Each structure stands twice: as C-alpha cells, then as structure tokens.
Length: 438
Image (cartoon, rainbow, N blue to C red; front, side, top):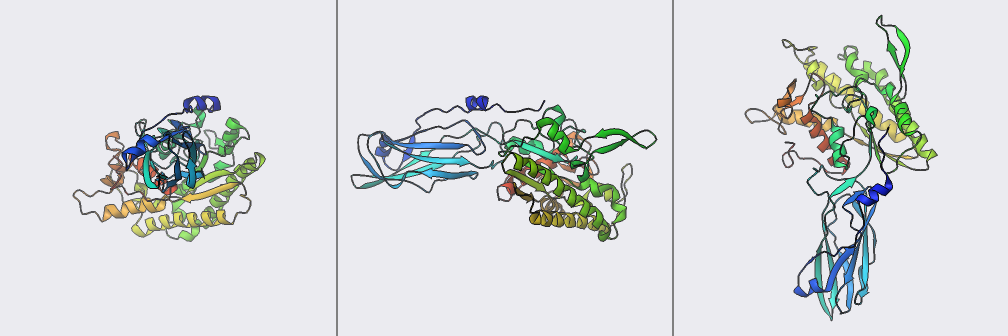
C-alpha cells in the first residue's frame, strides 16, 4: 500500500497553540510593551501559513507600529502584513504578520531546527520611537512530498540499490531535507518509483521480459507511470515535488556507436527527449483532470565519460580503455542530450499544468573532477573525495571515493549531489569548503 498522510494526523502533529515568546529590544520598556502570539506549529507543510500576532500588552497606546526588514528564511514569503507603519495599537490590540512556507531550503538533520529568524517591530510611545526585535520560535520540521522517477542513480530498492546495503541515493537525502524520514522504494509503499536498469522508454512503455533462450515472452513489467497509477490511481499532489532523472541507460551500453563521433548518438538523444516529454505530458493530463498545477524538476545527465568503466585498462577491473578524446565525446553526448531536453521542455506548449525547472548535475560533477585535478594537496582531494577515478567497493571508503562501482556513485557522492540539488533548488551555490559533506 502507498503511504499517505492523514490531514487530521498532521494537524495534531503540527498543532496550533497560542504561546507568548520573549522579545529582545533596544529599550528595557519595549519588552514590557509588546509580545508575540500566534499559530506557530512545530511541523510545517509546503504552502501552509504561519501568522504572528504583534500584541500590545501594556496599558499605553502605541502608534506607527510597523514590522520592518524581517529577516525571513529563504523558502518563506509574506502573505499579509497589517503592521505597516500607520497601525495604532491600544491596550490588548494586535496586528498580524502572515508568512507562507513555499519550499524547503536546507539540507537539515533530524536534530537541527529547520527555520528560525528575527522580526523587527518599530513603534512610537508618546513621541519616542522604539524598536523590539522578536526572536521567532524555530520551526523544527518541514514537509514536502517527493515523488522520484528514474534509473539506478535514484533507485531506493525497486531493483536493488547501486551503492550497497548501507548506502542511499541522493533521493533519500533530499527527502530528509523535505521532511520525509525515508522516501522508500515504491514496491514497499514508498514514493520512489525509480528502477535500476530502466531507460527513458520505461517511463511510459512496458518492458518485454526474455526467457532463457533470449526470446521475448509475454511477461510484462509495467512502466514507471503505470506503477504510479497502480499506487495512486489518477491522483496527483500539487504540494509535492515530482523529480525525473533519466537517460543514462539510453547511452551507457551503446557507447561504441558514438565514442568516435558524437553525432551518431543523435537518434538516441531525440528518442530519449521524446520519452521524457511524453512522460511529463501524462503527468500533465492527470494534473488537468485534477485542476491543479504540478511542480516538476528534471535533472540533467552528468558527464558520462568520467565513469571508471571508460578508463584505461586495470587488472581485475572492467574497463573499456577509451582514450581522452573518446571519453570527452561521451560527455559531449550527455551535454547534447541535456541541451535538447531543456529546449524541448521550453517549447512544449502542452505542459499547461506543469511548472518545471531543470537542475544541473553535469556542472557540479565536472567541477569536482576539475577541482581534484588541480588540487595541490597531498594526497589530492576535492570536497573530501580522495579518489574520483576508481571504484571503492568498500563501505569504509564511501566518503572518500566518488564511485562505488565502475558507473555508480558512492553514498558520499550521493550526499554531495543532494546538497548540490538543494542549493540549486533554492537558487544558491553549494560550496563544499564551507559546508562539507562529512
């Protein structure tokens, strides 16, 4: 069964209470004149609102009451403000300041408060201008549903995990930042529908299984869209984020076709782009039927040529021994796919009920390689990784090696991309020197 959230349960978890909190001020009198009350939940869901009541708790009349330059956390927007400078508050009167939680902004841990900020209030008392700085109580948890579609880079267990038993993919860590304790594989009732080995065609088309002789047999594996509909029917969630990261398997096992000429990959690029377009059109149809708009992120492909599989021969390891030019050609194919995919989404006029954006996995992956190659440290390192060209296959090295096997990242590399994802999602840049992975 698909795990769903009961609205009543959430209201209990994020119960609304009227609580008075202390004020910091520039005068001793201010603390005795103002207090803040309001529906300050400890757990906040996407698109929900928080209202602060700025209350006059003195017997004096306060004039020109105004909230000025609130130090809002990113991820919130002002909905309404009745404390706008012309407000007069008599004894026990209050004005309101309402915020809406628009999107999660941080990669947080279970023990770290999600949001905290200050609100400054200026006012006049008998002609004297005063100011109080309200230390807003922190919101401990945030929550936004996350639905993931893709291949082994995102699979949380539908077709195994390509890190190791203890490891996770980026989807797990982004889900944590979004308030999901464990996104989970869809076959176990979770919301990660990604499946290792799938191509873009498997987003929308069924797989033909094969028997021992290699012939196609009637056994059919549903598409990821069908698995979604089996779990949720035609329901979609306008407050959720739908993420698609797909395309690597469209090219990975066919590199001999285009390693010497990237133009030879053009038919595969066009087919992959069309498949993702078609998948989003299916989601758009569900959104139209439910009269909602969906939030969708499409992740670009990383530089394919950096994977150890294509590196020089090494005893006991599977290598294709491509030269530097050939490996660069593979990465160029990934770039061409990313460009054509974004262009196609921009010109797809049928996506009327989808608000989409792309998040780049190519640039941060390539930057890590470039930083490593230019490192002057001994041994070389970049963002804590001391090896970016060989597979580890050792859990003890999962935070030092970038690759777990010859094509899949380690748990540490998935943490790295999760932070890159959250930074891009919020319009910032992740600096691993300031915010290390481990």
